[in-house]
Image (cartoon, rainbow, N blue to C red; front, side):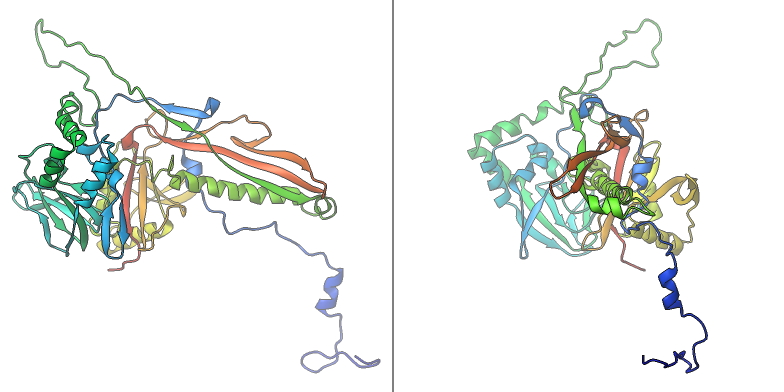
Length: 468
């Protein structure tokens, strides 16, 4: 601008006062603390009862159980061909603890792939069971006869399930239900005849199958635990049975897991740029928030102690229609006493709400820590964005009983560690490098334990992207 030239406004008039752009040079800016999008509600960390663990290890003692196999089979897919991983055949009750990999490999090769369309019958009620079916992909229903002669859905099977395995131990077994494909299903079938022919050549398999009746001969309750002999309703001088409670000789032990990072801050930043906010405090605050997010992620997804991986197979349910419905939530609740909380991805909660609206059902809400949380049958449904969503837009809903006194799900921690800022979370100064960089070691120790199998249940393969 030349000397003497007037400053004009956007409307072309001469400027009569100081502009805001120039005035800001003399003003003090009001600033927020550093924000981050990663922070979530972290309801699992807040609602899980935390148990103090001395020595970094927690042992879960249980009654002796004689259950002989209760798992899920895993497959590999090449193009349109599916084959079972040989070692995964050991999940079948009849092959549990059978370790001859060469024989398992041959059994895997004898599995024949079959495709079933929606509504097709896989096995019929009353017919002889002569094949073991391994469900590689899809959803199938177990149908029986209701009390008034109508068809009743006894259960829903999904990826990794197996049925018909009783034929390996009992050649006279018959189907007690009808298995029907609810969606397109890919199934691997292993015939009893193939197993018998292989057993004639393989001494290890023949010996193993011959000893199958050793475990079922034990007197157990419906949970597979050794029976406690009792007498009730007797009169007079009846003989009262003696008994004892046997313990699992090899109980599971949970070691505390760790999440760590090293936070680095240049001393020049900490010295000169520390007003009006402390740079070290803000850096540590955001680092701790990220560490807690990772901690909750591990509690849900870790393969060793995560809740999704440690739910027993008989506590895993499949939605009857794919979408999460009130019926599915009721069945999930019915599998355990004293359920304290549901845990679901926010999109799964939304899908459940849509299904309730479609049926004209309106879930209630409960107040937890000053927040109104959606609930079903009085049990709060907490959001958790750490529960994964698959490429097929399916997810899981967890239901659990919590607390050590109720034999539920508990969190594990060790409070009182050096330089602790929160229970089981510490920030330790590591020194200053030759480049004048300060280092802080941020550490969190944690784990989770399911005290008895029915404390945790999962509704799997919940569809969240279907509107109907």
